[in-house]
Image (cartoon, rainbow, N blue to C red; front, side, top):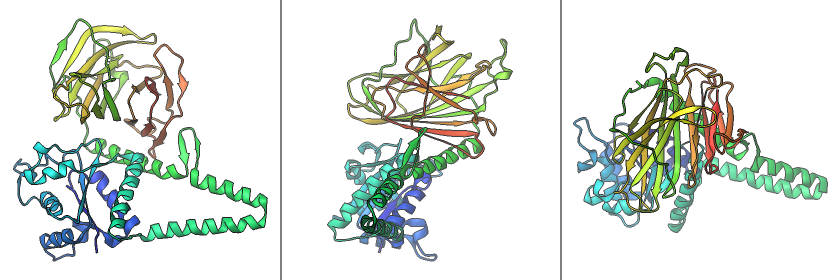
Length: 455
């Protein structure tokens, strides 16, 4: 019997759904998790099977990705508007049954849909408490919370499900505890050895920002996530824009970005150097070498404020912004000036979003692309990011143009451009097999720190 039913849109949530289902089956057992495609025997009518499984399950997990509410069919019509849309049918059926607990599993940076984005029959779904799953090593944190929630629901129904791997691991822990007790009678010295070994194996050692032990799995998750992003960028090459996709305004002076009215729950930057060739940049050339940054933020508005602005700087000739569709209204501001940071001269532009329609304590996401054009060749080229107060998690992924592009990366940090550089061993840092790309995951970054990557 499948006590856990997973509902999802295949094209919307493919990066995490297979991993989520695999780990749920490890934890609760192969037959305890229903997942439409591979759980239905050939020749069976999937409509009848879905109805039967929904009628007998205890929990419906609804996986919500960034395009969940606005997914369209081949005619361009939103799928949720169809009464026979199977994601809609699954949720409607579960909501109609008092003994089925519906848990939204939101794949960050996606957010829960608003009531006006779904049919009236799904309005109650929008008020169900969500559980967030983040990519990379943070996946394990969200998954652990999900397992605890599922355990509580199943226990309340008198159901106990343990997958084979979970039973095996629990058995190993019991054997380990029994062995430790035996060791007490052998000698006091042996006790100290065993305790030290158990501590090392279960707690892990940390060095140069990489943790061995518990977070070794987390690093592996980050590595898989890095491979996924590299594959996406290499199979769908970006054509860099030469003009911003939103209005650009000249102003007398740029204001300072102020994030004190926001909580930044997640801040990710994906850097692509596939069009980066500073050797081709000359005084007379234009738009020949580009660094591309795709930034995604998950934020909460904490105070009444009308505008949110992001600053980008370059030593090159131009900055071009492209906000993703679905973001709040935006425009670009520039004052045409060059600013001397003490190390180099930079030009700056701001991407400004109108957040006046976002409610206080409302969670929202921002995604935009920045193209840094024609930075001249430097002895030590670098890129980086600044963290701000209220930022809970930061992640940087960088994709080079060839193997070994990031073989000799040096990670540094500083409090300002005129303060001394410090070696940075914070967070989890992983590279792919040929050193053409890396991922850096930083929980709880230091406020107002500039993190720099020299390559």
